Length: 327
Length: 260
Image (cartoon, rainbow over all chains, first blue to last red; front, side, top):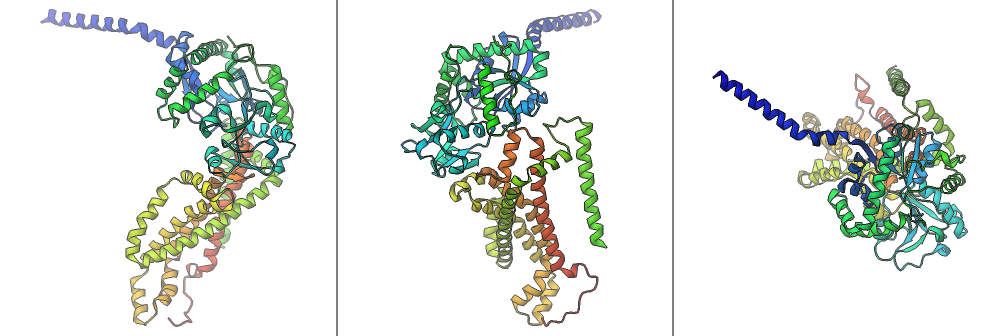
């Protein structure tokens, strides 16, 4: 009886040791990954998240020693605060958000461009005869965000108008107002506006709209996080480079990853395919590089925000960005 | 004397709220871009006053028109439903359904139909206000002293006279409770309407742009103004109640000089 008990205990112990040994490699691999929280710039997911989803699904984060989770802010202006309050580690922001944050002494720094071009502008329904020449007296939808507030004066200047010459309609949904004829123009970027409106909308974008050639979105992090976790930030950007390239090379698969990750995003597969296709040409600069920021883009944007009185003075470009974490 | 006590009580509660707010910011070491001190929020109001004043007036107008429309509709419906049981059975579930619809989902379609002007905001405010008023009128009229009604009938009072002299005063406490709830929520409706779409600026969009610029003092300052608007409407209703229901303050009723 005693022997049987000893054998039972020994066998049980061996089984336990074997189980622990069997599971420990994966457990240690998982625990060795550095956890990073990535906050999106919008309260719900859309296709600009594709590179991050691809990096998760294709193992690019893991390959660089990271385990990245996605965080959605409660409002569009909360993302930058989340960086400062350490509720996230890295985030996607609009470029103007970074300038405004620096003005408000929020300790954040841009670490890379997401897009490399300014694809923002005015959009009207397909077949409409609207143009800059006929902008006077028209109703223009605005999101009331810093980017639109900064860019709209450039359009007016190009059209030879002032703010009094148009009616700005501020709101939370642009396309329904445009389609129902309540506004003549909406303000947006090509990769969102064209799939939203459908067909071939009339567009006055980028240079044609008179807006400066500055990227719309950037990756950013908290200044103290960048100091303490520089290697992690570099690893994040290295993974994003691989994932972004993969998302360009495998657009169909990349969109399906997004569809699967967010089946209730409210966007159809067809929308995501078209929107991502329109995003891809924005991701590299003329030299074919991802992410690289320039002093000129930051000084131009900061001066634009000074001109529209969103900030009092433009800081040195180095106050806004760093390229030192780029792969 | 009672009025002064009430005023002192309100002032003390205001001081407590401001004190707690200040303490959270100071002892919690909350960064100014996350939440401001009460003084910073006040300073922001003063600095932006020339811009905020016309926006505040617009919001006051929206709440006033919407409140009057909602209260009138609510009282009318309440009376109708209390007098016609069959109509009550049919309409009451629809009223409940109307309040189950999230107003935030209702605002964008209203804007599409009614445009960006005053109308959609007034409709949203009225939508919020009418329900508590209807329910309070219904409850008030349902709880009128049956003996008084029987007495009026025995004296040969007409239904209209009975309604004016017995039912309305009896239901007034309940009615004013509904009106106070509606008055306080009215500003929420106006802000939701302004957020859905506004031609030009509005208090809600000003707050939205302050938020985008990480100006927490501006956001809180605007919130204080919105709160003040809501509280002011509550105060106005309370004052109307004070002057129109003197019997609530007297222990002995005035001698009725009128024949029923």
